[in-house]
Image (cartoon, rainbow, N blue to C red):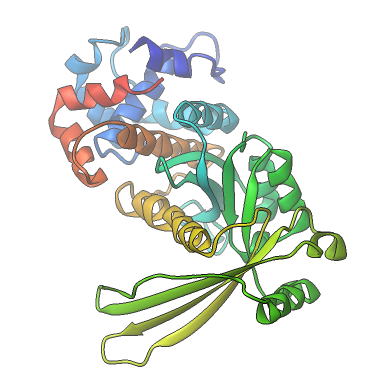
Amino acid sequence: MRKLKRLFRPLKDPRASNVRHDLVEILVIALAATLAGAKTCTEFEFFGRGRQDLLRRFLELRYGIPSHDTFSNVFRALDPKGLETVLRKFSKSFGIRGVVSIDGKALRGAFMRGRKATPLHMVNVWAADTRMALAQRKAPNRNEVAGVLEVLALLDLDGALVTADALHCRPDVAQAVRERKGHYVLAIKSNRGQLFKAAKELLDTARKPARASLRPTSAHGRREHRQAIVAPAPQLAKQFNFPAIVAVGRIDSWRANAGKAAKHKVRYFLASRLLSAKKLLDVVRAHWGVENNLHWVLDVLFDEDACRSRKDHAAENLAAIRKLALNALQATPGPNRTSHKILQARWNNDFLLSILAHMR
């Protein structure tokens, strides 16, 4: 467990010098408890008291298990940038490659009384290939674009293909991705004005664009068919002062629910690399992993939206602990489902220790 302790050791303890409980031990207990399904500071304490013999195998616990108030005070006071750095360091050890998706998520329970419409808003970065959370950043004043620019500045994106929704189809975001040595595939909508019209016209009039289609699929009572075209766009970057546009793409999809007529949807994309049409289909499909494999898991398995921790830095720090736990679960061989790994960590001490041993 030395590697796990070393991961947390650089964090600066925000408390006074005469505190009883070691910061690293507090964070290790919180992480272990989260792996086993604990969701609140009170549950961290319950977990610690129930697994005290196990924890003493690798923690000194000179003053026993911290109280829930101690956990709460630490997460409120701890600089969230420290835990964000730990998250990035751990995920980076598995490599950043393939599709990297960026998306915002509101922590719906993290609001002050009387301000239910303005919960804390986080920007999350997700690696589709490794199925890991790479980074997070609080959106300043709930400004998601500003949060994206901040988190991009922290990442090494060499070899990665960054995807984002139409909110982030902006020159500054595209420039930030390229400065970090990444490429982008950005959704674009009609609110981009002349750039959108030019991209649409280029695709409508392209001679022999690259084409691909996927076989119709059926699942959950609906049937879907998708096809894509991609065309080079060598002039758009200079014409609209939008960094590094190399190609434009369009995906047409038809989705029909049981007994209803199919609905046709068209989406357009800007790319800084000339992709095949099949690759565009794969990249756009992979982008939604940030919703299905990160945001959904955080809400359903870790109860993130229900978490009412909201004071000071508590919400950000607990969000980082949840992502660290998810990454550790992904890195550990075991049951295919994350929910089953959490159950096994709750019931099996050896499996819980094996997860913690993967932290480095």
